[in-house]
Length: 90
Image (tube, rainbow, N blue to C red):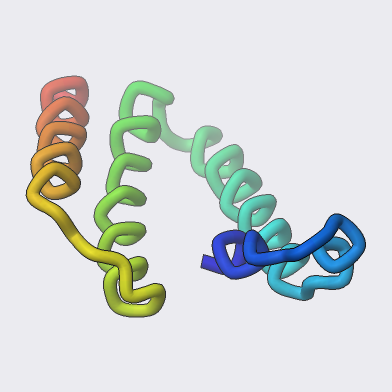
């Protein structure tokens, strides 16, 4: 969400001064570190499919906060990803 907001810059200098870029970058890094930490306890074949839940939250938050439209294609794609993730974990 923060990186999306940071993408509305006019020039590179404005981008570097945009606090949303740094907040988004920090959250991205924190998520990556958390993922690495979780891998100490669970197999990669379990962790990777669970990260597909991110697509659900992204779609919901982009609808609520960024006012993006949820189309039938997006819902079908998300459901397809989740079904694939479930099949991999089984």
